[in-house]
Amino acid sequence: MTDIAQPSTHAAAPVTPRRRSALQKLVQNQSLWRGILAIIVFLILWEIGARWDEWFGREWMIPGVGLIPPPTDVAAAWVEVLPKPGYWESWYSSFKRVLSGFLMAMLLGIPFGLMLAVNKYFRDVFLPPFEILRPIPPLAWVPASLIFWPTNEMSIAFITFLGAFFTIVINVLGGARNIDVRYLRAAQSMGASQWDLFSKIILPGTLPSIFTGAAVGMGITWEVVLAAEMISGGGTQGGGGLGFFIWNSYMGGSLEQIVVGMISVGIAGYLCSTAIRMIGDWYMPWKRLH
Amino acid sequence: MDAPAQSAEDLAGKGRLELKKVSKAYGDEWEQQLVIDELDVEIRPGDLTVIVGPSGCGKSTLVNLIAGYEFPDTGEILLDGNTVSGPGRDRMVVFQETALMPWQTTYQNIVFGPKLRGELTGRALQQEADRLLAKVGLSEFKHKYPLQLSGGMQRRAELARALINNPRIMIMDEPFRGLDAMSRGLMQEFFLRLFEENRRTNLFVTSEIDEAIFLADRIIVLSNRPAKVRKVIEVNLPRPRDYKMLNSTEAYNIKREAMAILHEEAMKSFKPSGASVKMATPVVGGH
Image 1 (cartoon, rainbow over the protein chains, first blue to last red):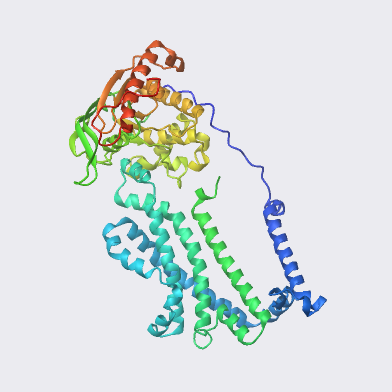
Image 2 (image 1 turned 45 degrees about the vertical axis):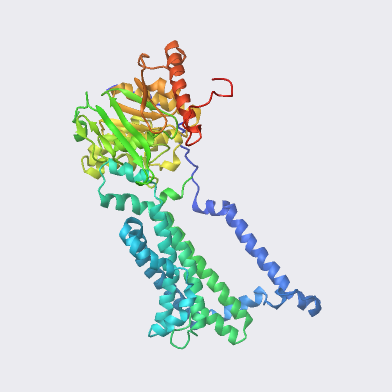
């Protein structure tokens, strides 16, 4: 067999990047330093804004900002609650609710969305009721589910589940329906069975949408859990949570603790979305290039 | 050399494709739009047949019918005497732009077919894939994802993905569309050398007349929708082909002839709908 000459151009030589240690990468990561600097500047401005009236008298108080406790006071309040088990129990119960609702939504939402995408009859039957229920905000379900479910905990779990479920289903459905038909056709030509098409084309092709749905769903889950915890007054039988922590601080009149609770929620949400992003990068190596 | 299982089939003289009075219409029974109208085409084995036609004339529908993704309303499509009844590895399609699975590396894309069918396994599969990777000049990009490849490299990976299935006929559906002029020229030359090496039956669809003349043994010019054969032109330029041959008198004559037909057919799209009168004499000069 005669070998034909290789095309010489437009095959750019692969670039081998210079190896850098993890520490070097961290030190040289400009985005990281800019981010840290931005947070520091923000904290300083907040401190100045909140202390303005202390320094220059009440008539100089900056509207709005002047009433917010300065970050140093918040930090002090934080140090105060850190050793208290109640604070960590709030983290634990909120996380437990978010994760259980979220995982249930993923567990049911992904197969449901895929079924809607691949089976016309399934879609004809289940999409209309789904589309009527979907626009109902999760919080509108609160009274009904408080009555319907035997315990507060179960109603919170249910509402949390709803918040993520609809988003995940819609994303999975859209993603699976938008897969380039040429991928399916190419696979068919090569002899793919229906199951091959599903497992080797539709499933990997839908992964990006699954992770988008998961990221958005996770955000909604935190919103819903927090609101549900405040409404249901968590403490009695539902067992606290960060939402109740904030509400309780409000009832107790501790401004600093309210802010501590808020920032805790921010950190919790950030941890969750980072986790989803990392899992997504892990499962979709082709997505982290360019 | 122990020939891999699927190469065992001797393809010499294989790939005769016949379309017999093939028609295809879209739409419901109230409003039918005829896309292909009693098309009769014969593709000779070992030939590189190029189909050209004005855009929107039904070339892609034709590809879908031959590949078995869609079915003709009337008529029959035969490959080496057997009726085409669905997609199959004996007819591999190279699609417009790229249809490599983005979630698979070049290597994974290439071995997709044989692996799926379980024909080749282990070392034999790796060897065959490596041979094809070398052939299309992508050995170094074996473990890269399609998004990391240039347009030209993606097309070559796609050629390898089709070739590993050892099809009787390759169906190229405007494969080099979207490439810049430079890459396109290089891809045409590369593709020609690949074809001239073993003359696997090839059906190449394009809307570029220069590309058609450069590549083809035979050019089939289609009419505007509904597609019918307007003209079959034999291209008797010698092989191996060279870009300079496009400047020959023969190439020039073919181009002039084909362009005249294509222009006439393309103009039909501009005819006001419902008008039964022939096109008025063009007002603009240059005709």
